[in-house]
Image (cartoon, rainbow, N blue to C red; front, side, top):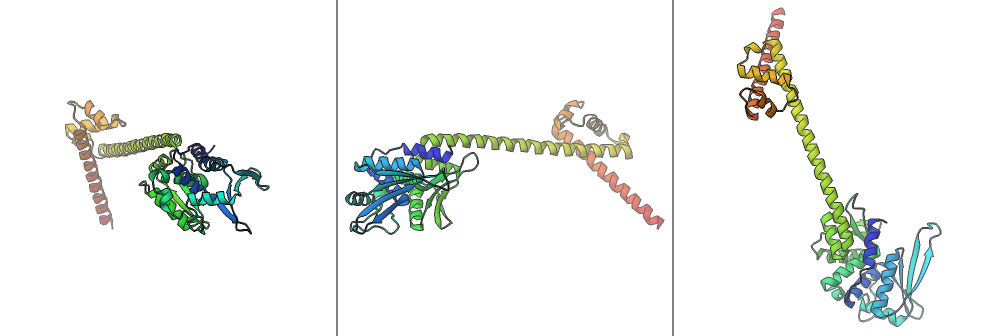
Length: 328
C-alpha cells in the first residue's frame, strides 16, 4: 500500500464528533467529487463519483451520520483498465438533496447552485476545527502524497482556480505555505516542505501517518548527516595526503640538490621523519621529535622546507636560463 493510500485509509476512519465539522468535510468531498443532475421536472439528483473506496466509505458514513439517510452505491469496472473500479453514490430524493446542499453551503438561500459547485458561504468553514475537516475531505476527494522515502510532496487537485484558491487560503490559515500550479487544465494546490507536510497531517488529524513520516524524515536526516560527515572526512584525508606528498617531494628535491647538511638541525630532523613516516599526521610527527613539539611547530618547519625547495628550483631555473643565453 502506498503512503498516500495509507493516509487516506487512516483519514477515512477519522469521524469528527461535531456535526458542523462533518458537514464541512462533506462539503469538500461533494465540491470536488460531486455532480448535480437536474431532471426534466426540475428535480435535483446528487451523484458522487470516485475511484477511491475509502472516499466512498467516508461519504456514505458522513451522509448517514449527518442526515440519517442511506445512499445507493453502484460499482463499475473499467473494461480497459480492469484494476480500476468506479464507485458512484446517488441520492435521488429532491428534498434531501436540497437539504444537503444548503447545509454544506453549496447552495444559497435562493436555492441557486454555484456554477462550480463551490462553497458559497464561509460559515461552514468558519471554525478552525471545520477548516481541519474541510482539508481532510478535500485530500480524501482529490489529494495525493508522494512516497516520503523518495521525496516530500503533498497536493490537492482542483478543477478550477476559485476552488484551488479557497483550499489554499484554508491551508494557509494554519501557517502552512501552500502554492498553486496549473497542470493539464487543473489547478494543483501543493506543499513540498517536509516539516510543513508533517504539520498538514497534524491538521487533518492523521497522527499515525504523521509519526511514520517523521520516522522517515529522521532516518533521511541521519543518513544525510552521516554522508556529509564522511564526505568532509574524505576531503580532509585527501587534503592531508596531497599536503604530505608535496612535502615529501620538496624534501627529496632538497636532498638531491643541496643535501641535508645545509639544513639546520631542526629542519633536518623533521625532513628525515617526514620521509620515514610518510603517512604520519603533523601531531604524530611532533611527538617523534626530540624534544616533542606541537602541530603548529611541525607545520612551520615543513613550510620552511617547502619555501627552501621553491627557492632552489627558482635558482636552478635562473642558472639554466643563463646558460641558454650564453650558448646563444
